[in-house]
Length: 336
Image (cartoon, rainbow, N blue to C red; front, side):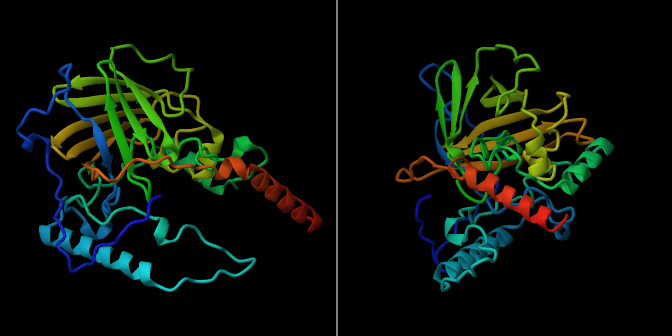
């Protein structure tokens, strides 16, 4: 993570309203071999939530005044937290997580009231009865650490933000897009994942072959890159550790069926903006598919993509497993 400078709220704040792809009205720049040129380093950070808040009901978009006010409030909050005196933690107590210095979720709304635009209410569709039972069981289950296999993949620093879909997070929201005639490569800042997407028309792998970020296949639909992903891995640890959180596609983990499919569409809107759209289909988890979109904005030329050296779950594995053994001994001594 790099240090960052917070802009005073009195400075001019640019309004950012999501631009429909059709409004671009121009053909995208081309690579030397003729494909639309999406290359560059971008960020998808935004304060717009995945789901529409209840108080915004059926409103799909914010007004320009609301966008400006929400950005101003976020900038002022960051400034207050930056200048606030440090707080001490108590030995034996909860030391908490990252403070605001480490967070970089952005200050700008997209202009929408939610990333999800379909269903029209901006909310996730209902879960199927099977998924409801699965999530309920996962929430009741205590995430134990008998072996390294019980730990979530992000706890082990294996995968996290690469997606699909590539949703905004609390920090490390940067991506680098590279292209050749046969591949599109997306390097992800979070846990330095790299997505390698073939464009040669090959079919998907057999369903029993699972890849950490799924089996990705790409093609061009006019100026839009379309990526279809199947064969996502399913692990019991992933499901239990996040309580069956459907947004991270963990609600389907632990089952033997192969019903999850993600479609991503990436289109250049202007010289500095890509429009990123995703659709998730999993009929065993949700009663209908759902879709969302948000802009990915080009980073300034002096902001580079650095390696994110996530290693807590690797170097601290002994401590994580050892701590679980201590809890087991304490429970045994107490006769539980």
